[in-house]
Length: 300
Image (cartoon, rainbow, N blue to C red; front, side):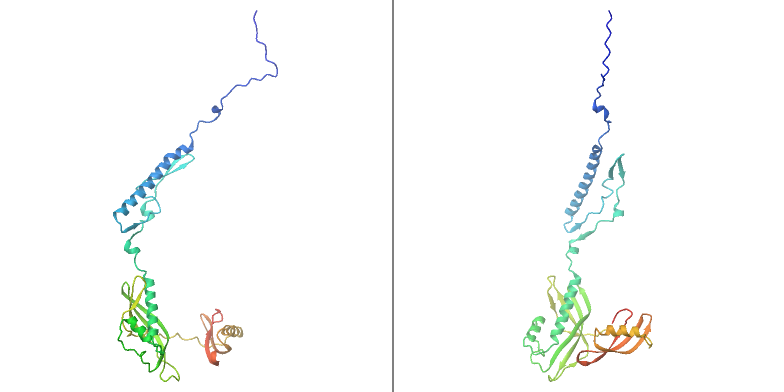
């Protein structure tokens, strides 16, 4: 008697077993692609650093700065993309520019601008002290000490008159070699022969030779030498007279108040720059001074 299998019950469901690994596509890991790329880049950087150190070791007086990009001689830069590695040509030295190379002498060079400023300061200072005679008993000793001459006769020793330097300004600086400076100084002195009043002398000019050491010490090498003052130029012609409108005069009066009292219109004129207004104002002591104002530019 044949035996037939009994049919499954109505609620029976047969499910086949499928491994989960079969559902995942067998694609390579993108991180594995970056491993050789990273190795190439690291090797290139090591080669550059090693080369720079070899250059520095060969010349102790040379400082080498690295260029902004890896030289083309080292390797090409390899970048990873979703579709695979892509090769990008490396930047050449001609495109980047050669690295700057400085010698130790360049780096240790004296700051010339600072030296010149020191020389100018000391020259103006010395001219002020040298041409000032005010009865200070230590002035002569100080000046002789600066010049290194203990027996130099000076008017400060037995002053027969009084002299004050009103101002001193350097107007020319020359340097024949590092640390050596020749400074021209213009100055004006006020003098009194009897102590009853001072008279203002003419503007004069002298030159001084100075030496500036690397540590900032400034030495005056010799006595002042007379020199010529710069030539005075001619002022441009003022604009022709023209009557300024009331609002321009009022604006000029407001500006004039910053320098004196009781502004009074003297003249006005107009050129390509605008209105030029001359006014009188009262200064210290009640003196009346003419001043010029440019009200349209806001300058007094």
